[in-house]
Image (cartoon, rainbow over all chains, first blue to last red; front, side, top):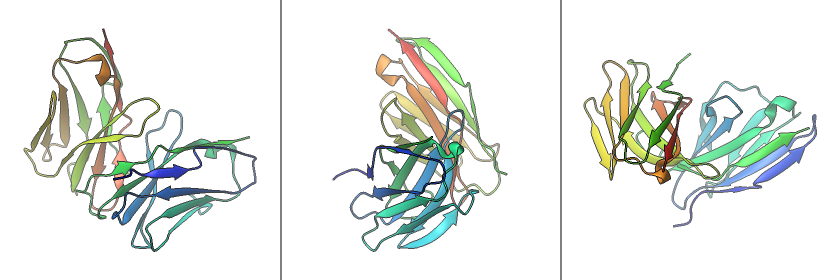
Length: 114
Length: 110
């Protein structure tokens, strides 16, 4: 089975621009979660999608949004980028959205905002 | 605000040593506790999912225990090897989403 894939792997953007990151889950997985990791911080939960619906959302501003398609692929969008948005963005997929299911992480997208 | 703590923050051990780390989490609204190993330049890898008080899980030289009443989990590594060098993360799930701890960075010296 192919693992979770994320594209692009690296991205450099300028303040004020917007960016879209993509995540393809493991085949058959319907839940996709997004996380942000910044230097000195642990993984911070952004949001979770299950069957095209946002089920949970973390404490991030509205500039961070996402969606999930019928094939379970998910995109995350950040508008009006700020320097503080520079981070590693990870997505994780699981078979279901119950917390007792294992999450499988992708390799991440490293975003640098200049 | 839910807080998950891990100790120690970092650890250096010699090859062959056994070691253990702690994850502390809220004792209320517990749903599941996950452990992950995160090697540099790789994706976090799931080690264990623990759901019941008193759970003990084992995978090779690595094992974990869970105490939901007092809100802690221990991860043990027996006979550490250099390939065990990684950051070990725990994540608390309270039925909605995951709250990750800051991780314990383990370095195993040959």
